[in-house]
Length: 84
Image (cartoon, one colour):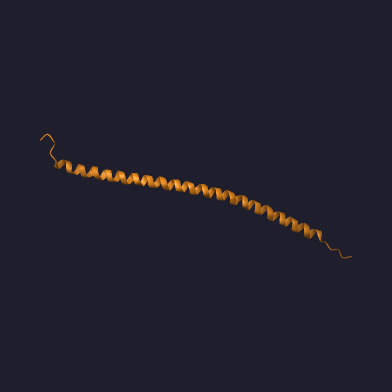
């Protein structure tokens, strides 16, 4: 008697299909978390860039002010006090 076993093949197919669906769902979940993380990271980087630009502007202003003060101090010894 030759026995044809069709059910194990179908059961195996259903099992594989279920595992594929589970893995796909897991990947979709991970992707969603990664997309949220990248969006948050991008916002943080943009804030950091804005802060860097602001600090760079302050640095330029302070540098210019120090240069001005330095030039004034260099000319001071050459000037007579106002009471002369």
